[in-house]
Length: 196
Image 1 (cartoon, rainbow, N blue to C red):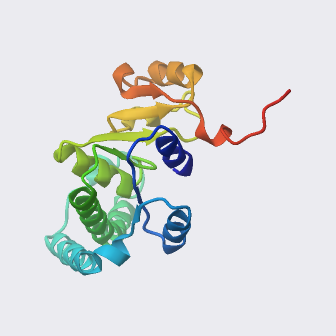
Image 2 (image 1 turned 60 degrees about the horizontal axis):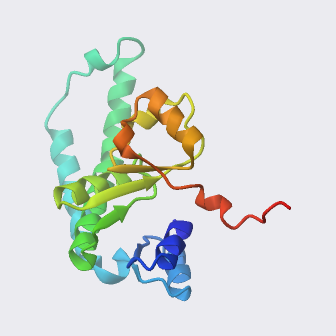
């Protein structure tokens, strides 16, 4: 994300950063980048969101058994149920906190564009969904190699920021909508020495 922030500054585009990790927050602030931290700015809301997530998890798990048999055409259905229950206990409170973060970020900063680091993580997906519901445009920078990887058709951001035309072609081949792709270059290469 730092190359994206640097590019925004160079272009004179108003920007800010959101960092959950204290170390990253401190680094960005030290670089003079306006940065928001949920722990520093809305810790009470975060605590309430965690408690709400824990309550929702208990309600879900107390609701009784769900028939997962159609989800498991092979393998052990009981193992799937146990894994889903364990993951739900872990993830529902985290998703509630991510929603709290996204809502507070949009309320306090009022951005026109939300760039998430990865719209496949629960934080990124929730951030994109909250932003879209508020009418805020969203974008996600490319990660790694996209060739022959159908997972990349599942991006939910308005724009997927591809490294170049080759990446764009691969994304189109696997079925990502053309209007979702923006070729912006590879920020991780910007600081590499030029060959002579």
